[in-house]
Length: 231
Image (cartoon, rainbow, N blue to C red):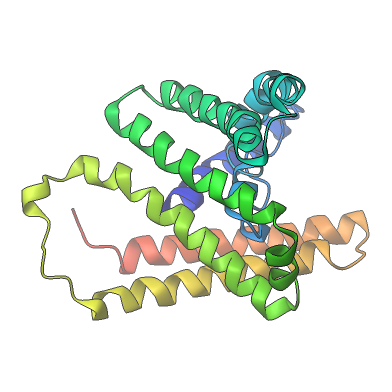
């Protein structure tokens, strides 16, 4: 959630400032919290770069692989048609973000998780179980968001020496993070429901977005002023 809140918040501020001078840009984040599968998060994440890579490289490469390797057996077809475009996507993202060992490590992990996710989504029986009821969908959705966040720990490790990591892991230390993650998740789900699930007139929709933005700014200031430790 840290990266999502930082990046999406900065993107919203930039978009708002540009709108004041009548410059329209795309939403950099498009409600990734509503994604059910892990790979769907990437379709709503950091769109300024991922959407361009998908339109100009991922989709053409997928179509090329499908024409060349689509007639192979299921496993080989999946590796060539799904694996090569996905791996290429994350290699480019790794270069874009700096080309360090951590960037490529994150790309390898993301490629692995994305391919598993795409494979599961194509399994009709598994997909049927997931969408069987709303509660299962929400659990699976939160689990994949959590997995997405855990994979980003690779970047947090860059600021620490491995020798300083406390190996005596205490499970009770996780409770505040789990609780806060659930609160943030349910808030975003509630916000999405209010802004998108009700047929609102344009003026009322804008007013509600302003209400949410005002609340988020005040909440962020309170957290910054009273709860974050001084550096």
